[in-house]
Length: 387
Ligand SMILES: Nc1ncnc2c1ncn2[C@@H]1O[C@H](COP(=O)(O)OP(=O)(O)OP(=O)(O)O)[C@@H](O)[C@H]1O
Ligand SMILES: [Mg+2]
Image (cartoon, rainbow, N blue to C red; front, side):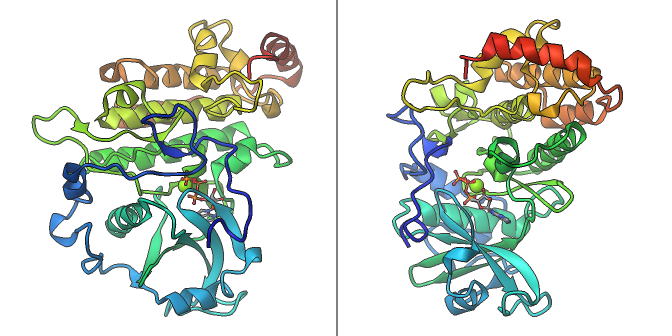
């Protein structure tokens, strides 16, 4: 299926990528340079049920769909059903019966999102298996629900609950989309923090490893759920302080010490969370536009001078908020982001503390539009060439 009916591959934003070699986002390509030690630990939430060489032991909670079922559910994967495309392949809208989970005609039963692995994806099977193993066993209101999977000859698909508002990325950065308000943004931050706190609280210390706006999906009430567990892995346990691993993830979001050394801890997720929080505050992408003539700059590098100065911190705020946000709340949220983005992972707070701090954020005291307009004007003057 190449790239979803000859649609150009999406290259415009930073993608999950192997960092070795290139410093550029690699246009959704993912390489498999995994070590054998990583393969054996994959999915060790329940080691007896997991193997990376066979699909025979997939979690029983999930429905096993035949390829034909999913062909029917998506009307033969027709282009009109495409919801989006990532490195793994295309995501289609499909229909199944809510009780029997049998495929139905479009418009009847429940809507699902069906992700189809593209055949040329190097490490797709491995990520597919990690997704099935993690999401087959982990259930939380801030994790997207995996309903089932298909593994038939070369075909690998995943069937998820449908998230009507799509990804956070679309709401923050896509042109022509109505901007989301302050309270909704903070509610999304809280939902993401709850999802990560849950993962980090598990015995297996699960590290999500690919937190970014495109992996945060939104339900009809804009509640956030984490999707894409293909890169997730169990964290350090016992006396171990970190897990050593190949470096994968997404530029602009990945923690600097992880990129530099491959040392992975739950604090790597905390850093990525800080980047997402900055995206919610500023409406700017984690990675600056890499079109010719634009300097490659991370959002963190751009925002740091403002974040360290309490008088200038509100200059990072998204002008599309129209000044309709709590000044104190924004300052407090920016202070949380600063802590998450600390260079030394030991100084980053654990997710559970970040969640508590976000839940305490003041949501009232909206700054009047007129006051904000002057702040925004200054910001535009000061920053117009920066990103
Ligand atoms: N469960 C879902 N419900 C509704 N839309 C979905 C669902 N899952 C994915 N999508 C849509 O499909 C798009 C592509 O998702 P996918 O996870 O394949 O790629 P990505 O997150 O953009 O990139 P990457 O491969 O780097 O993770 C999403 O941005 C979203 O718009
Ligand atoms: Mg994704």
